[in-house]
Image (tube, rainbow, N blue to C red; front, side):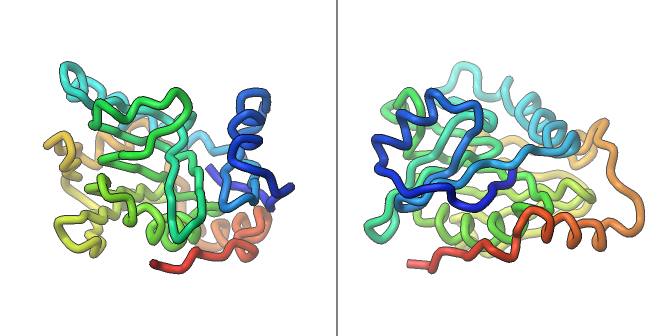
Length: 212
């Protein structure tokens, strides 16, 4: 899901309290608050397909799997950051704050026009600083394409356009056909539409955080 321009600068306590009352979700970066932009049907279907397929493998383990509404809190170079991943898996039984997680094993983001650059640059460089994180999965919503960054591979991305995707934290492989099941992928010309949508949502205004 995308985000608009920051609307104000507030404290962590004010942010967390405000999220309990707000009808619109916000991400938080060192005091700056960004309203989240709505997601497409493809975005929601892909996230649901992955969550539904992974859920049976979570039962009976210390892991907990969340979609969209659970924040991840990150401390980076003195900054406090809260993101809303599309999926987050935490397997640390001590990581049980009511409204956010700090020790995820797996994070999944579904790429859209408004989030592509942020997810591939800013969030990648931020997420990989989380000591517990083992893999970061980026799923394209416009074509069957999944990129996986794993700690075991020194975070070098591996791209799949066919076959299966290994979710290392749960030792589960999901076929791309399952990930994209019932997802109405767009036809030719999607790259042009993607660029137009990105400009509409203000993608060029986003700036990646520096790698530590």
